[in-house]
Amino acid sequence: MSATRATLTLVPRPPDPEARPDFATIFRLYHSWVAALAARLSGRRSDVDDILQDVFFLCARKLDTIHSVEEAKPWLRTVTVRVVRKRMRLQRWGAWLRSSDDGLTELPYRGLSPDEQAMLQGLYRALGALPVDDRLAWTLRHVEGASLEEVAEGCACSLATAKRRITRAAVALKAGGHAAADD
Image (tube, rainbow, N blue to C red; front, side):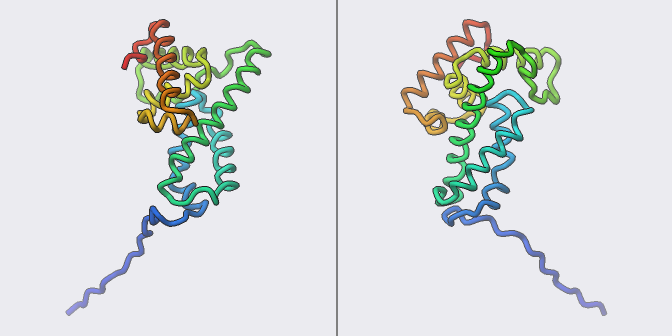
């Protein structure tokens, strides 16, 4: 007669949404999401590691301002938008001085047909011509699928300003022949 032994498996408990999070928890939960957001906002895969480092450096410095795990994601969205905005503005100055398109769009295009890749590259090229704030608001809304309130919070502006930025970007994209600008 054989006796079966019960085995106990330890499974990590999900973090309490109301508890004050530590840096490791925030990083573990959100680093992939921040990286994906940074890639889609910037359109440059080569910038993602630097953006990720900047965002989580700021997170470590300002950890005391994040009171719960639930507050971390909107806080990280806002910081990511600000870091990307700063990098885009610096890159525009650099591009003006260099006058080069090197690395304009370096997103991974896995699973896309050549026509879809060309359309996406054209869209990011057109987005690159927009004012940085308009581009970020439009990308949060139409690429990330963020609500208008989330766009306003992420861009640190009023709801009306977020709507104006999205509309200006959509009009400019539509004028450039991009169907992706339609709501």
